[in-house]
Image (cartoon, rainbow, N blue to C red; front, top):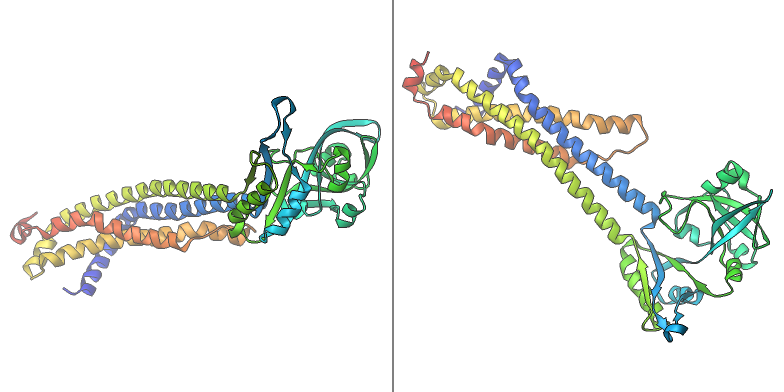
Length: 401
């Protein structure tokens, strides 16, 4: 028997028992659909996590003083970072595109009406906004002119503006006093990704120009320096170069630490991939259950068609041809279920793409894996029934009632 004739016989067999064929393929439909949906969910979660981290700033390097210095215990001197360190890095590390120092003050600020609050005041330069990917909600961020002329202006967080003035827009042009010096609020901002107070920016934070803030501290020392690297691929190398430049300007015993998101991105990517693999294993169990169902139905089919097998063998069909016939039927059931399941699995992400603005990721490999797996399930679980049919004695089969 040629292959086309075997396929035709398999199709005729399915037409004779459509309900049994559909119920047998149902397990593969569910398994294939779940496999594609699992991959889609895994990719969506991975994309969300990576987008959140990118929002914080994957090209950012944060430099801070960890400890160390000189002098006796009772006259110990810390070796803090300075604004000159920032200038030196800008000159000696070509990969750096933007930078900003940051000095930190915790002070009591007085607002109109006698309202006083203890807030976090950060002195930064205008490049701090693009380095940290801050979003200006209303007004503007202070610029180089404000920095150069030491203008007493400030920008406040969205949460702070809503608490004191009701809305970000209402905060514009409001004034407050910092150690008796009046400042004007020219803008409100928020982080592109909510860090829930785990970054240097708290809910109640005021940013002022660094050149103004340094007069409150009376020193060039800064708490941290932020750098933006031109190419994300150069972040780790640039981080090492930044540390080398700073160490060359300070005491050998001083410790400085650079922080990047590169390692965090790699960790998040690995975690997302591991979760996807775990979910895929769960889907594989569903496919295996579907395969067991196919094997049971095919064993029942072989038993119900014993006389048919005997007649075909008597007419000259070989054991190989009988085996191939039942194996093709098993593969046909599993592959049909895989195709229908793949269509159902793709329907959800495609519908989300069509009816919403969210670009739910679709991986073509998930469809290929689902179809290949379905075919493999048919071959694996169809082999036992096919072998049993091929080993039947034609004489005994013809006498079977």
